[in-house]
Length: 50
Image 1 (cartoon, rainbow, N blue to C red):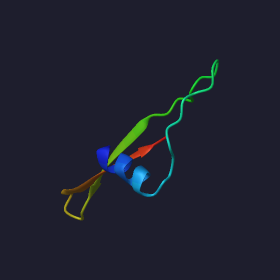
Image 2 (image 1 turned 90 degrees about the vertical axis):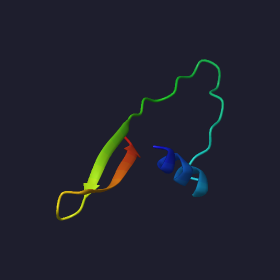
Image 3 (image 1 turned 45 degrees about the vertical axis):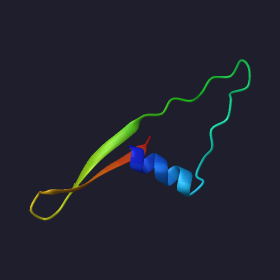
Image 4 (image 1 turned 180 degrees about the vertical axis):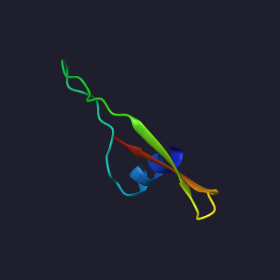
């Protein structure tokens, strides 16, 4: 998850701002997936927001 957040910052994907008074943030969740090679060995853990 830290890698993904670092990429967001590096690529200027989004920036944090204060919510206007009376507004609510939208719900998001992290989705995790293990990327495996042909032998089934975990090569990389991937994360994304959904």
